[in-house]
Length: 225
Length: 305
Image 1 (cartoon, chains in turn orange, red):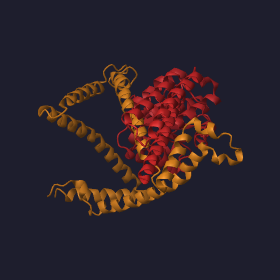
Image 2: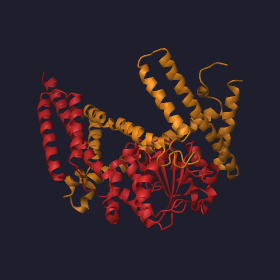
Image 3: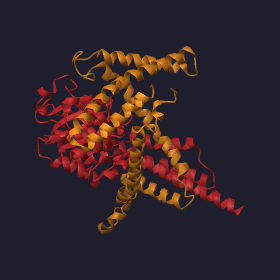
Image 4: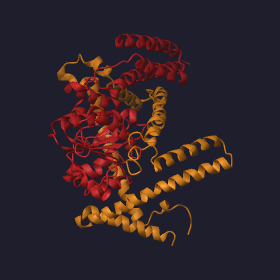
């Protein structure tokens, strides 16, 4: 029962959603299911928040490695939750936009979350540089092609690409590095991406059918009935 | 200042790289901390010396610009802020440029987000661009903020037939039926252009698959550089053009400055970021060359031995 009911729900919802795409009369049903999904998605926030608190409290209680960070996480979580929930400092009041100008939540977002997240993302540049140095080696023919393509794209994404090749006459403008970069993205990359997209699409169809027909039940977890 | 800065930066960087090249000729690999140091010097010097380069818009960016430019005044444009602060430096300048361009052309703007963090970023655009540069723009008549809605593709699946089923109110809690812009808008199909900005899921790809293509609405996405290659298969039919990464944003800012003199003194973050990005790319390319020299030297000495 624990597994049969979810499988029936999945089969019915999946069939209805496919039906709603191909038959206009089923469109409303498809929309209704989308609305149900949105309601469920909102509840996922409660589950996510609850899970976060549970995991970090357990970590602090058992004093697992780096449990100090869990305290910081929980403090940050509860402060942001309180500020957002009660719209503290919000000029438009409790009924206004949660991110209204001057609200404490917006201040936290602009002055703490944004710089921290941007810094973490920016650090990727250092790792990309190090990884490029180690990975882009002309070890064989394929690696050499990849290396040349990477070089053209890297140069093409900077004004130097144009500076280096702007002497090339207009009739051969395809040989200018920015245009070569566009050609790689628009032809070589495009062909590969389309092939992947079609493959993924077929895979999704096969996987969806397995789910609808109840042949794949891995999404239900490993608990036995 | 900028030229002197470029010269000093290039002398420092190229001098250092030359020393590393000589070191690599012995067939040795460079320590990653040295690579980090050079990337830091390249980025820091470009920021310190305020190094800027001229940008020429590529065709794929120009198509987006021309689309907004050629829409009749009063057209309805939807901008979706589907990104978080981590992606902000790369794609937020696109959002600001789109908003500037649309408002200067007199288009009606509808701002929304499929990412929870998007609403706060939308508010930043509201404060920094709309309220500051376009004080004459009226809320509800020239622009409206729908805010964030949970549900990912589910949201798109509904708004393609009816906005009101998903958004009963705007982000400020005003009933959507009392907002003048929405008098003529029933669904996303009533939009003249959709500009989704982001680089994750849900994002521009979902806008193309769930709204643009089935609803026959032109979509012109602004994308983080890492996901731009994934959207190329949809260009030029499902995506009329696209802005990829800081470079795309800088090209758009440059075109906007050229076309509208009033934006020449407006802060253009993407154009500013192209300096550090350019120098960082050069350093990365130099290290790739050095890495290959070291690799071939080592290979030759091994074969010789």
